[in-house]
Length: 601
Image (cartoon, rainbow, N blue to C red; front, top):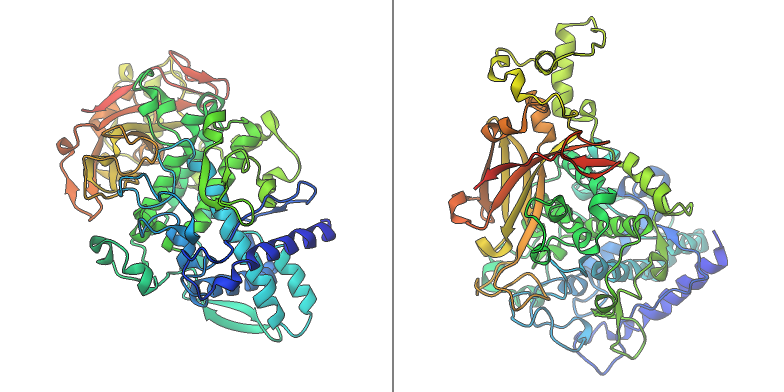
């Protein structure tokens, strides 16, 4: 690492962020002072890699994470909510309170209807890129506070602590990694206390964990609509990430880098399928966006995270979106996709790019992570294009059933019953293959349900099976969940991350689609693991329809009759690495079976 370059950029960060220090006692709308801005980092400065949370908060990195925890605590509970560096102020950017400009940024906040309260872009080609300077902003604030507020408190080795602060980059929560499969909800988000090296001497001290929740200051909270105030001032989570959701996310991320699905920026970037009216409703490219994976994580955590208007008040939001940005960076480095020229020139409000100006970042400015002074571990070596794509397809390979807890439990039970391992046999008929699979998964007396004609000998074994769906996002006037079952057992969820509105007839989620009365979104649920557990992975697709069911759960946890959502369309489809053999759609890396099973309506 070029130490002088790092110190130079850190000094720049300090000068920029310090502009706002004068304003700590002034309302963020006070235009009598200079505003916070986020300059482009000089290209000569070597970027520093962000780390995954499991690595960042490891014991070997205790100095860095001690500074990070204290800096986060400072912006959360010490800075006045009117200070644009405070967590309270930064959280207002994404959603509520509506009509409340961040740091006095001019213009309309939201979509102009009053229904989308924040600057955020959802269901929009700008979705991934808009969040890049957003995470960049809180990262710069953390660096500045760690260096100029926390590090000087250490009386021994003050310069070393300052140098460590300069190397901090915001960690990302990779909800599709091997580490998350083993530890799906990292303790850093749930433990009530954390041990740090505390000033002034760097001795061990236990502090309250600043990432578990956030109590929204009264002045900000009182600007929320009454229905949201019923949730209370302190953020909460209804659920947590499970191994099954990690497995589902892993399979979905694998397809982000599949050449067939990832060629088009709109298909990759967001879940809005209004743009795909010229496509077949069953085209897989309608259902596998980065935004939809992002939506599921919000829904899996629930609580404040499950509502787009207030999700940014939960500290886990920023770790989640840091990983969304990483997925964008990896996609750019492999496929090279980016918004078209017109879209890329749209200002990304409210992120100022220079001093004493209201000029905002654009996607062109945020095209590279280096423009904000960071990179990611996979990109440090310079690997790009097809070689990086091959690595990512391996890194995010479809989950090995032996690694998945549900399947592993079945296998372990079978091993106890039968210690002697059977030799590998190449089955000559589908009937023999299915019978052996059912024996492996200990499913008694089920073989008669399926006969050999229902098992296609022309088809290769599926690697994964998906439920693809289209639905009007505003169908329920708020977020809702599609919950899938296989043979009566829970299989997977798909979350519709929709905004509540007082005017359901007006679009309330898509900032750039005000003339449309609805937004049709596309998404998917992974049924692979549930089918494997039931021993039904390789039956004829026509049999799946008898086994797969779906229910709708609204934002209050109530079941809603599927018939009340007439826009919902669901079909089932298998995916095969290396091709499915007959009637396929895809590339050499993987293909979709030509047989599509209509589940609903």
